[in-house]
Image 1 (cartoon, rainbow, N blue to C red):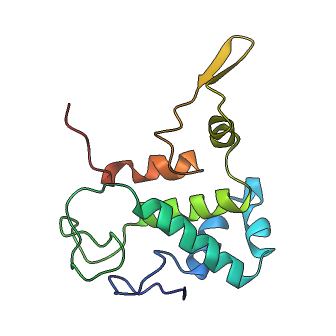
Image 2 (image 1 turned 120 degrees about the vertical axis):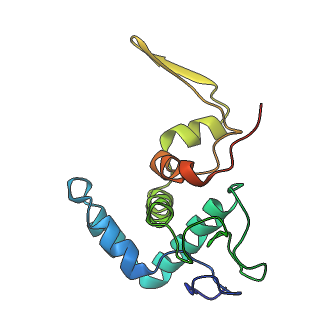
Length: 151
């Protein structure tokens, strides 16, 4: 699959260019993300961004595609412009970086069948069915765009 970031294109494979990802990850200096990201080849960065885009694109988003022929879910017809929202781009960067680092421990635990964990007075309960992303930050960034379920 060829890396393609043309907005609304029929062969688009990523919402984010490697340059945009590098810039975004450079805003997280305390975690030294830029160093880890730049330590892998541009081909690997492209593969990570394509996989992150694929995972993000699996969510049920509000509205419909702007054009029925576009390969990805964004741009959306309800959104104010034919651009990709910055929050969505940031979510892809967060997920790509999480994939690079082997994913989140909580997702690995849930996939391994751990239902909950307790340590001292704190406890965590996992719901593996709800987790489609490795990055919790990516999931939070996507919230304004995800279709809300009616009860």
